[in-house]
Length: 328
Image (tube, rainbow, N blue to C red; front, side, top):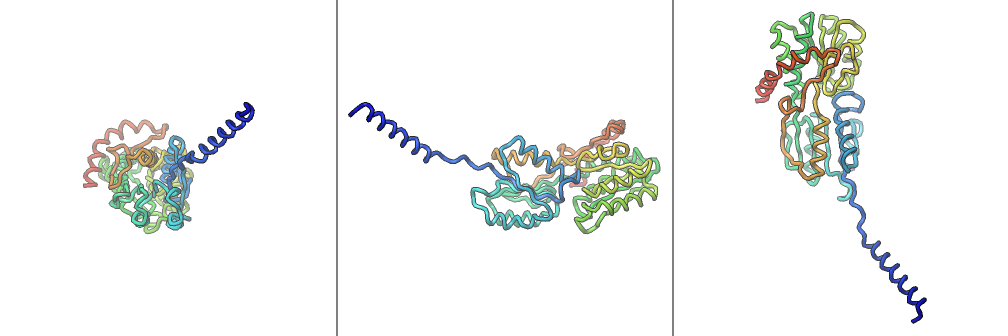
């Protein structure tokens, strides 16, 4: 055989081997998907945004693809899941808010191969649902201590998005904390919409409620109403010597002159840790309850009013004890 012909045959064989290798090379594994269902639209600068921030950090640090759902479109999720193949199904679905308890339970029963993180949906934990109950009694107790310490009128209040077991912890903790400081302090409360989740998105109604409270002598309001808090902030901004205690996220930037502090709920940390746990194989189902003792809630002070930090923090052991008793 001539040398030139041998070289041609050798090159042909090498080409065939390369083609065969290319055909047998496996495609890269798909990026794990996480779906999240928010309780309200983004931009509430509170509960929903905290969950969104936790997910954004997970996407920054971990190999994960995100799909988001909101109150306007979350009902499309069951049909989407029914159409997905095994390769494209989400590894984890996060539902944020007590209003989704039945929805989460139903989905988890229909899709046992998917894990669920159910935030503030007490008692629905199962093999594939981790039900995270974040109790806000303890941090609300500290908010009450702060309100009773800051009030000049002896008259404080709280505005709640709606009536629910989750919000009852805010209301009771705040009242107990305020009256621990001053047994004669007056504590008013109002729901934006008592029996509807619209109470978390109606800033106009919350503004009217706050204006009424301020006119009636209240000088510190604890706002526990998601995006509706914005209405109370507007009311505080249009008067003098009237103050706000925010919730869920640090809301001091929204009212540097009148937001004393914020009772924060670390939804961002729980979302991040749960996504990481699913990816590294440590995610487990069941019911989990966390609060002040576990660092899932706490107080963040506006620098302008940081002088209250030391005096209010001294009440934290009593706040923890009160939370434990409340949950017993």
